[in-house]
Image (tube, rainbow, N blue to C red; front, side, top):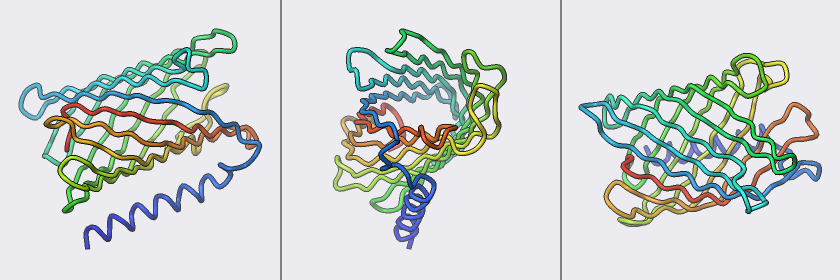
Length: 233
């Protein structure tokens, strides 16, 4: 029954994505090919307190340079083996190839992560809140993110993985993010457990960005190679 419930939950997320972003295949939507190579580290400090660090280089269609670089340090209070509370900071740099412009963004973030194993299936629920301070924009943009992820073990080393994450802006800023749905990311791939408590996932991600003008949305097609070191199995 638990596995059936997980399947229904994933089906619901996929249907919700299609309902929220029905125009992803439209001809006037801007498309881009990207490569994302995030690396995430998790290490115990003392007792239930753990350190968290993530670095995310993103390369756009012009593979001669990095288009975005995110550095996300934080701390986790692991209340139980299945439940963790996080808080941290993020520094993001956006590189524009058109005018050689560099835009910085600073964030404060908090999240709750709930993890549960159901025979061959592992389910991850993540709710993240962000306070974003963007270069050239006055004020603080508040954004909420919810991710639902499933891993299905094929054997002791290999597993299939899929996830969906929805981003919602909770307020509007003049010249900045507008309230409402910001973007959605859907990922599907295969994972391999390399050494103890470490794994690598490789797959495809569709990132649909909902811009303020209904005719200039963007669909980013990314090859994602993500490495986890010390995180939950």
